[in-house]
Picture 1 (tube, rainbow, N blue to C red):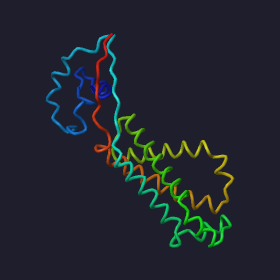
Picture 2: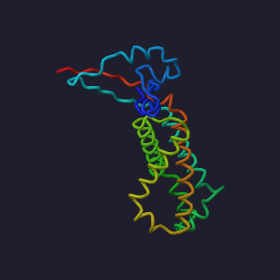
Picture 3: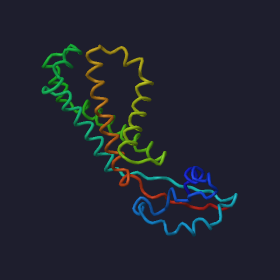
Picture 4: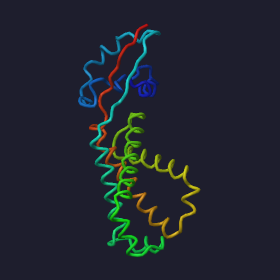
Length: 199
């Protein structure tokens, strides 16, 4: 039951009772809640009954969000946008950059970071029971802020030009990941599976 909604609408003594979660959601999240009368009459869990549930995450939307963030990074650091400024900030030559681009390790590392970040956003959405593009962007910004705060000492030591380039990319990637993961929330979280464990 949506306890907060019921409490907010109980001012006149007639709370508006509705479901907040169901084992058949999100596939039937927009149903007419015809089972509400049965749910209201159902007995609460006994003291020895434990409600165990985990929200499993679909991987495809997260992979799409991570790929989008990684691809944006490739475009952002290409010769068409900010590669020249990026090279100047790091003091690299064209030969050195060409050698870096030819390696697999930097690409795999950036892809892994994007994937880990997308999973973090999905986990925050699942834990907080939120959905939608706006909520996804909010969770993505919160996670990015936490990462930046924990590594601020190292970030502050970067050259100013490099910091501005990377900050622009991080903002764009953060918004992109949040929008994709949050926008695909109904395809992201599987229904909760509830089990009763009795002693």
